[in-house]
Image (tube, rainbow, N blue to C red; front, side):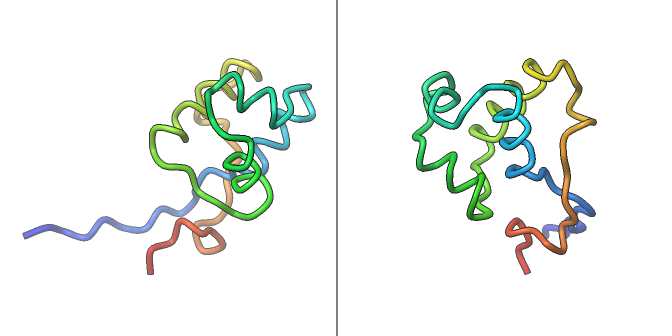
Length: 88
C-alpha cells in the first residue's frame, strides 16, 4: 500500500532560473554545451513551461548555484498550482 505524497506548495521556476543565468552572461547555447543538453530542450524549459527530468534538473540547479553563489534554498520558485509539474 502506498501513501499519496502531498503536492508541493512551490516548484522550481525553470524559466526564471534560466533567465537569471542569461542575465549573468550564460546563454542557452553555451549552457547546453556546458551541461551536454540540447539547446531545444533548454528552450522548452525557458519559454514553454517544460519540466526537466530529475537528473537534468539537478545539473541545472548545481550549475545555477555555482554561477550565482547561492544555495538551493534560494532557487526561484513558482506556485505549484500554476506549474506544469502538477499531476492532478
